[in-house]
Image (cartoon, rainbow, N blue to C red; front, side, top):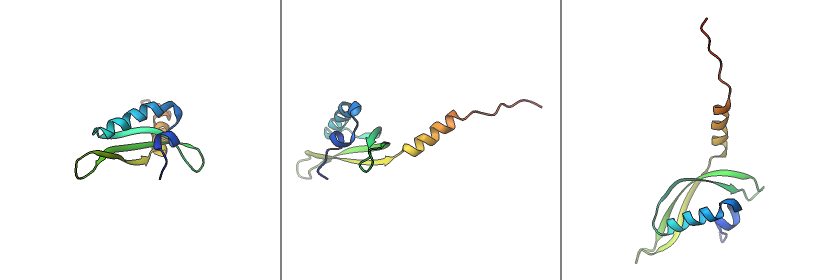
Length: 95
């Protein structure tokens, strides 16, 4: 709490792009299935996250007051999928 997702955890190469995405979310655009790299706090490792974002509004006037983000780490899933795609296939020959 009290930390900036973009400034503190997004790697510098992606900060501008993600700032734009979050700005769009604050203006009411739902952001489904956004994938990005995040720096893990405890060890600085880079992980891949799948996130959905939606604007939160005040109840009285409907003004945007924040963005709700739900994320899931997908590093292992993506690494497993990449491994499956790069595994050599058995050469099938008719006998």
